[in-house]
Structures are given as structure tokens and as C-alpha cells.
Length: 243
Image (cartoon, rainbow, N blue to C red; front, side, top):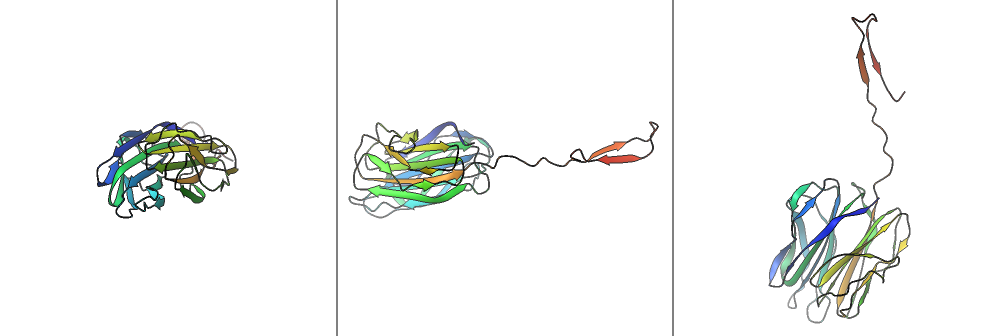
């Protein structure tokens, strides 16, 4: 069953640049890393380009909502890496398609997820010109697992909570103008992703469900070899312990 591993790590940068890197995190082989990014650029629309890390893991960018400048929403993205390579001081870096300011990155690690095809259904997103409640369309999961979401604002987040979610979401890490939350579900169900904060401003939110690893593993078939020559029994034999 899915479980959060340790606490999330973050990174923030206010000046204009095209990358933002997280703090270091000791990551465990076979787990999954969830990444939420946020940025602003009033002059030009900017999208997420790539996500990389020191361990050499492969990341899938589920969705990048470009900032539109002016009074529109900030840019945000959601990405993940499955079945990761372990690293004692991993750093995750988000690269944007152009320079942007007020950049945030949040990285959370989870165990127990499917290592080959973890995505459960389609990514969901929503945005609004103002407000303190950040929700996406419902997600109907097909199995137990994780629903992960992040949101970004044009102002610093404060008083972040998971009560707008149904069921309630657990608040993960926060960084500057962004925050993440998650729901660990023991069965398939319809989930309404949602988080809140006391700062009312323009926002974007993205959510995705992930399946647990399949339970039950077929035991390996191991042939046992025996040599009875020289102890009173002729010949050699092979034995399959599952028969």
C-alpha cells in the first residue's frame, strides 16, 4: 500500500532563471518521486521543459499549465518518476522553456506504488482568477493507491489545509507560493481532489491518481540438486520444492 516516505524537500528562487532545484533527499530504490513546480513570467508564456535528478531517473511530466502573464494564473506542472534509482543525496531539477521568476519546486517520495504502470486514469486540472479553495474535477480510481495534487498561487501560501478534498487530503510540503497534498486510498473510489489556504489569489491546481503495486507474488521455482554418490545411494537427483 502507498505510503509517504519521510518529508518533502523544496527549492525556491525569486530572480529570473530557467531552472529550479530542490534540496537534497536520500531516496530509496523502487519508490516513486512526485514533483510539483510553479513559476511566473508576466511577459511571455512559459511551460515546463524537463525534470531530471542526480540519480538519473526518468521523469514523466503529466501536465504543464503555462503562465499567461498579466492577471492570469501562474505556471504549474506535475511530474513523477517511477521505480527510482536510490541516491543518498538526490537533487531534482525542473527546467523551464524560458526564464521565469518566483520559481518553486516540491518533491515528495512514496513507497508501495506500481513500478511499471502506476498512473490510474487521467490527470485533472483547474484554475481560477481568485479564491482560497483549490480543487480539480473528480478522479475515479480503479484500485487502491495514491492521489497526489499540487497548486500554485501568485502570492505566498499560508494556512494550507486539505479539508476541501473529499475525502480530506493530507498536506505535504509547501514552498513559497505552492503546496502539495495527497490522499492514500485503501480501495477504488471517486475522489474530489482539493486543498485550501488563507491567501486568496489566482491559482492553478493539478491532480493525478497512482495505483498500488499488485499484491501477491508468484514464488520462484528453484530446482534443488543433490549428489548421493559415495553415501550408499547411487546417482544424482533434481527436486522441485513446489511439487
